[in-house]
Length: 250
Image (cartoon, rainbow, N blue to C red; front, side):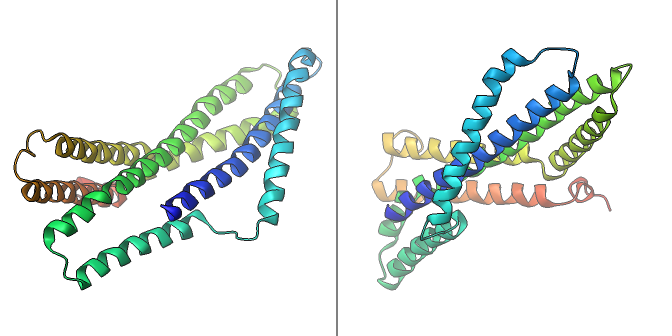
């Protein structure tokens, strides 16, 4: 539990650090682009009186988070903490095997570890969903911005690089989305997590197919969860293959 708390705390720290940075950066870019595109044609004073203080606050928040991160004595990555947690779980299982613990007790230990597996699956699903939504936002806003800038009859020279940058960003985002298939990865991970949770709830409530003795139900639960995990690994392998390989062509 202590290791899990460390992982959650570290994730919050890093998300706050990167979140404030990207919020401040995007806000600054938005103010700059809006100012350049409406220079001497529209008064952005009322909007800037709100946007600029918010941007400054974001930069201040990022500076505070960066200072705390720099002064932090123990700088451990989330991956390293997660690895330590996985190692602890593996050691726990190895100790159980060394003690020749009966299968029902090992299955019970397996069941107790399922909530962490659910959390891992949902965290990965949320991670891929967040990446997909970010790229989709870039594609949508970039496409609209590029079309709008290109449709201007007298496009200022200062906006040409903006148009090029937006077009490049849209192309990169579309390419990464199509190649790495973040949406599909998120969908399959969430689907597997929901299916495992359904089996856990059925086991806890004693509803079909978990209506037998405790040992039999534990065996069924372990078998069903392992089948779901195998299917998930097969889907991941399929997504990692090139498009031609998935189609069965050379």
